[in-house]
Image (cartoon, rainbow, N blue to C red; front, side):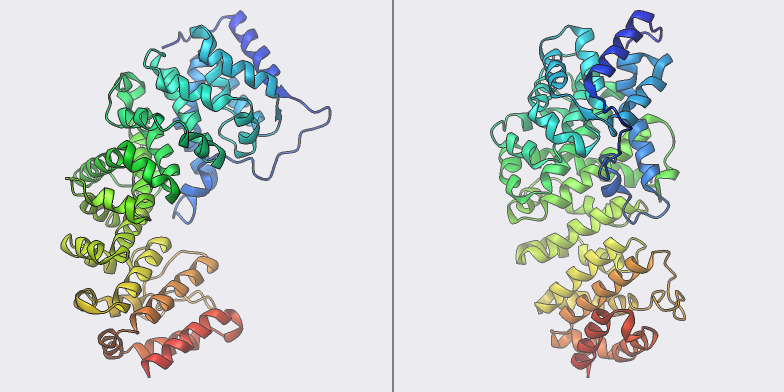
Length: 475
């Protein structure tokens, strides 16, 4: 760990390098519309109690603290923070980026510290990715990450930078020609090859590795590479472990503001959320899903633990993973049924997170439309009543709830999205005669008519049309 004492010469050197890597315009810089921290859009979307700024603050606290310590020492953290701000506003100098990449690979210890800390303030911003990739920064970062002889904190910060850049398709294409890098991530998740000697005994490194894998898992074309490298199996094992531990410890938080301020807990929450996102992504293709289901552990059980979580992010990805498994194939549905996943999907329809509700409604509609034992099981679990209850939410026209209905806090646009999911799920379900009869018995016609009476036709033509189609099937 660097000393907290910062010499004048070191500060001058830091300032000189900070000035070099920015190509300042003569006029005031214009902040790009897209210059926002990397994970704000993904994590904060529709999460109750969280704002984009709150997530950005958490990201800065979790992520750039190590870089700040590296470059400036604890006494000068404010200088590092200003570098992060200015990185979003200025154009980067490719020549200086090339120098930083060389320092990271060939430089002495102090050069590597400085280079990775400077880069960490740039990779956070999507606007900078093109020039960073064109300047050879990604191979340099991956080289540092792959080298166990590199000082642990430098290595971990380099891994965080690499995870940032893997939002770019160009970075993902680069991985296809360097598949061995995935083995490094597997070692990181397992605490091998000196990864457990990093900050918080490897906790921050595992969080970065899970984040990187969640990016890759979002692209089906990369699933074969993840499966063959063992990365899919590693993230599945880690996910099962984290889900079991968090369920046992009840370490779930309703919002980011509820997470304790210590870094160890923040990183544990971050890792589990990104791990859940990675498993959700892998469940999106047959090859990815089969790799998860073939693990000796109880991956589906872990997903169901997340589906029942009070953490809205875990709940969303847990429900989504179970939903994808249920609709994937007859074998996937059988696995979900055997694990008790149908009950989890029915329960998710009534949860607070709108995306989780939509995942569940879509799965219920698709499974029941196929008929058979899956449909019968869902009827017994109360799927007809659950789907109809989604229409008994606060209405767009008044914002008031029907009698006995759960009051949600979502915006008008989100609320309409939930209604669309409910109606589409019901339209899928009503195709099966057994489910149609069950919906009629559950006063489905009256529920849809009541829904229509509270939404003027001009409020949303699509909702009106979907509800009208549903009434014809129920008649």
